[in-house]
Image 1 (spheres, one colour):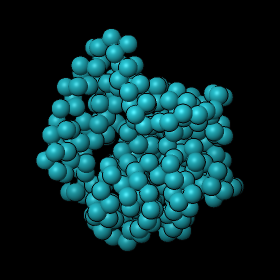
Image 2 (tube, one colour; image 1 turned 30 degrees about the horizontal axis):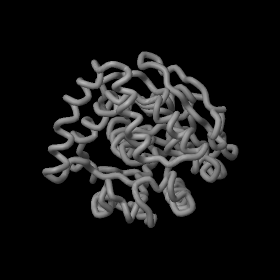
Image 3 (tube, one colour; image 1 turned 90 degrees about the vertical axis):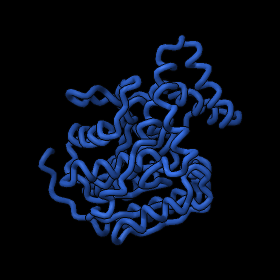
Image 4 (cartoon, one colour; image 1 turned 45 degrees about the horizontal axis):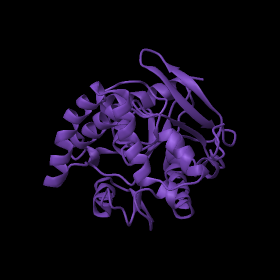
Length: 289
């Protein structure tokens, strides 16, 4: 275990046939428990996004979290990041672990990936839990302009010397983290990311919109709204909930990084949201085990 790392469930490399190799953490949960697949946000990985949540969720669910493509120890993609591929990776992980139907839990960028997983694989998704996220991420003119330049920055970083790319990531780390063992562990985890891949993922996020079809969602859904969010405005999070028939709303009085920075508020809301969805979801017997 890395010095300063918090307690984490067992993890291992998992081969996704025809796609590549990723890193998966898993909590077995109670016998017969419903399965959750957790999808982290942009620039994070499974450990950074969910380390405060594994224990509480594992008391009720089988919990699976993996590093998404281009992040952490996920599938290497360089500048070739597509949200649809990330959604298909989610089902590939479920296949590799013998999971048939599951609840997808998406945080920030993981929210669009979760929405697309339902849209592309409706027979596999039993429910959705969408946290600190939206139907789209390029609403205002300023946001659209910012996302528009990201593909060019991504390509430039991809051909830049390794030292330059590491310095870019180092600037992100020093600007957002303090000092101490946990912060140093987090810096190590952030350092696994390729800045060029992060830029490509951000550009893909800017192009994403589920407005045309999100109202078709027909599985139980919960939306965890971060009320002080400075990255994804709370009114956009509520519009996402309003667009999905029967979605429950679970407010958290915290900013966008609530999963790590405010776990005493975020984790209980997340557990409530997941239990609400599981109570309404239909799980068929696994045909993969």
